[in-house]
Length: 468
Image (cartoon, rainbow, N blue to C red):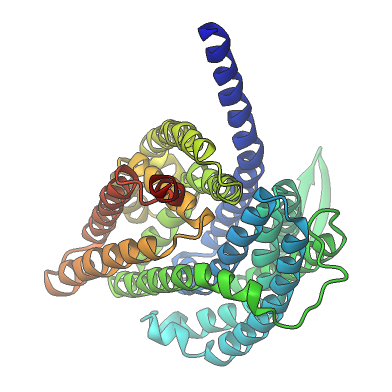
């Protein structure tokens, strides 16, 4: 009997692991493709010089601010829809998808008006060097003209993932990335001669430089938004077709209850990134370029963490909707070791590959040396940050977003921003000190989420079962 029971548990663990990986790998691949395009974009723009790299990167944190605020709305729908599927209530999931369409339209229009109207001021607020402010402003304006389809890509992609479909957003993301790279090749560089198998060919190019990169991205974003909207509308499981699109407070209220703290968290964190980048921009072109490139490089090594977080949120929401506390605990026992192994490997690769990766995007030795130093510093903290990402994913899935909001605000503003302000603006220290403050922030998050995990705060079913 004991052997049979152990065998059954092993099969259960194996089946759960397969489910986790099935959900996670398309998200990881999608993020990998996005990061690859960021690498290519940065390399292409970097070939135009340090000023071009700084102009593109100087407003990048504002992109995080807007994108993460919209993503928070998606988290509210993810929690609601994942619970609905866990409770086997597909009708409720479809009604929620219709409400997601409604909010996508509202947010898309709002952020279009906001970003277009503020495009001239944002580089000034970000303390961008006066010589590149006009270039940075125009780049930002073009990039945010297709804000409605960009909003659709973010929210509808989350809706599809919450229904267990992670492959469709991956495929559309791949299409968007391919379009972006192809158009970059044509829009950034002027017409030129290429040699293929001893044959000479003329490749047309617009020669628009940084502005060409913005146009390429804008077109790709627009196509991606249209594609994912069509897919959601025709989706066999989660299509909102036939549902009412007027506000439904029975759905919006619980979604916003989850989304609002997450929105405040992401908004506050991203605003912190803006303040962080503004202080780094004030250190000069070399620091700005090294920071921009290092951020791009580093993003690839967070892919295992955030890919697994999406799967954790979806499966935790399913378990919570089914009131299955045993499954919730089993998920944690599989996710956490798997995440730690992945992020330890990721950190080791980043540490040893840092110089070569920096050289992909810059030929300036000062930029390469500075970027290598900060990347090797942050590589050591990767496993600790990975743990935080997974526990936060569980909490998003079950709708507990208030505690992560508090943890992230304390870490961002009292550690990273205050520390960077003191180090760079008062003590006269450079980029290394700013990234050291960022690492301390990540370690603080690890400690707070570890306490949260050990106390069982992450799992509402513990509370429910203890009361019975």
